Length: 569
Image (cartoon, rainbow, N blue to C red):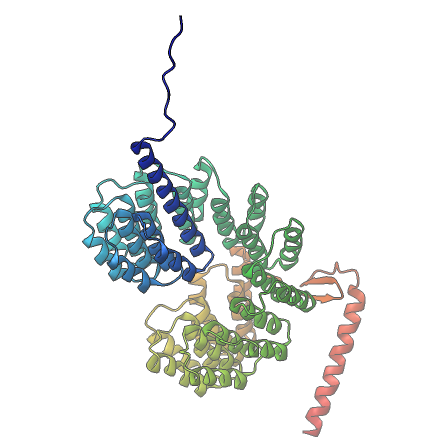
């Protein structure tokens, strides 16, 4: 028995043909959307727009891709124009234009778009809350956060970050963190960083210990906290526990060593970093220059500068500013000035750096020259500018000029004086013997004088043997800092100069009873590749006998020269 074969048609049906064409079209648009995004990320925005214009079958993703491409390349107005011309908008379109405005600090327009949105999702709220926080409008961010139907972990984290950065807001940040229904690594990291930035190091450490999974950013935040406390060894121990170190963690550790007077270790750590294959960035070189400056390591500073040029950071502003400081701290003020001259567009930090450089070298006239020059070119001085200038003027002993600059800062530039500014003017008056005037100024200050201001007065009292005001200054210093050995020693010297030996003995007994010891002085110098450290009263240096002979010879030479100059003058 034979069965008949039913012929099967291989010709596609109209339905299949339609489905295939639809699939092909979708694939085509999908590829175009990917290409627009790729061109945008490469910075080729014109090619992205050309492809967008050529595409006849645009879908909503095509429009959104082009919209995002514009603002990610800094073309906010183009994004706004394209957004207005879109035939249809979805929530992604609205979120994109809000984010565009936020990224360009156009917070008012961002909120207008947010208000006009027909339908909002969590990303919409988070973008707007983030924008408010970024622009310092934390209270508005909080209001929006409270209106949000279902805040998620991103919403909570952004608000915690905002609270932590506002004045006296860290308690609110911690309360919100504790109230979070769910936390991720970012939440923990933001809270720990906030505590560190607010100086709450113990609380930060307690939270860090509780953190379920510690990432490199959280570890770096804690390393920063340890370094700010001067606990560099604890920072190093934690640094060693990081398995995958990034450039930020290396930089923080190098900076920690440099800023805590351990420049050699900072330089050694940099060498170790390079051996791992990690490429330095601008912050690395700033830290290295700081390390070289702290120990006056000129040769290492020059070598670092050669590396800066090699890695292409010689035009980086922050690196250039650090180079100016390094040369100045190493005693090369001429090279410091030349380095400043190489900066094409100096900012306020650059000007402050060169003014400070000459101030530290006692060259007030050059500091004043650069101050006048910065004002001429339209850069407005700030409190640091005047602090450097006042310091230079004070060192030059120019009382009237110091008072003039102080008044210029307050009345012409509207800069409220801080304790450091008052210290300069009190110091120069006191050293010049104008002790009553200095004391009167302390009484007229808008805030309570700290120990640095009273110390400035005490120095003048020591120079001019003023027992009454010296006692007043010392009493105020010791009320603020009972273990300030310098105040005890200086008061004792004032009594000795006045022949008040009973009072001298009383001060020494009081020091002993309080357990106050005079701090030992120390210094260092580099000869060749070796760093020599000297501590007052410590004879352990291997060449101490030769050093004493050389010092006696130099002292004798100075006395002979001084006597000769006095005789011929």
